[in-house]
Length: 451
Image (cartoon, rainbow, N blue to C red; front, side, top):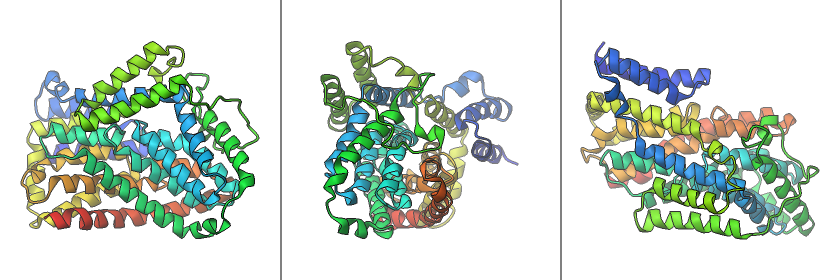
């Protein structure tokens, strides 16, 4: 077996073991980088460590640190509370309020599963109380989290744009965000209509539910984001239940100066990233440090809430892929993809691989791995790189509704016990359908016209 095949086989084993055994994929990838680098390629430890993505490290730490501060000081609670109050008793708009909250939370730097863990208890509680189909509500939450994740300061967007820049590929953060947002929104619309949205619309305005909705949102959002005994975020998911309105919590949901400053910081980060091409990681870190200095009390424990697991995952995967790039494995694989004969068929295969793997493994990991592996193919200009990257982003992320992914599992865990089997089966049906349909549609809409 050639060195290239050995290295790619090890990468496949890393994905498989991480999925089956629950070990952090990044930790496995770092070990694989060390073992394969030294034993197969005769590299030194310094050579292996040179591939660690310092730029992505700063981005991930910066944006998740800033989001942790937003959780601590109640900005996230304020967003949930405000979105629910905004529907004004219109039950038909509650699923869209959950979609919007998840999109906002991930767009400002939350890891997608963290956003779902925060909003799912609220959403599934509403689904039970107001007779909304739980599958519809769960899908709205997951697709909302996906819709915001590719913003320039979102986790998926930061990773994708960082990998694109580091590999010298043409990129468009705005196009990536808009394309993935529209794709997730389209799936949300289809789900809404398929699971009783029209019946909800026919109910009209139910003024009596306004106060109850607001009280539930306050209690559930606070419960999902308050620190637990160890300083980590407490979530109703951990208890396998939804938070009910009986668990009222006295929380101040006014837009106080600290929350205003936090929101201004988030807006400044977005404007700086899009309008002035500022480095997302260092800008987010700067805003987070300023917030910490100005409001040190609410910043307590925020560093511990940085998504270190995601940082480790991306750091390990990108380090291993960089090793493959330095040893010519990526070029070899690119040549094999090109040998398929048709660039369009090769592009479709890349999107399908992304969807299938992401439905069962880490979306973050597959985004960090597939783009570098497709670099030689993308550099041939046989297909439009910006379009294919957007299609790959869509194919790899909208499948997170699968119950085998973290987001889908969180929805199942928060469903009422009597509904869990049904929710699991429906999410599996929809997830597996999207695995096939999403790559094909994204390829047909984005890649095919630009070829």
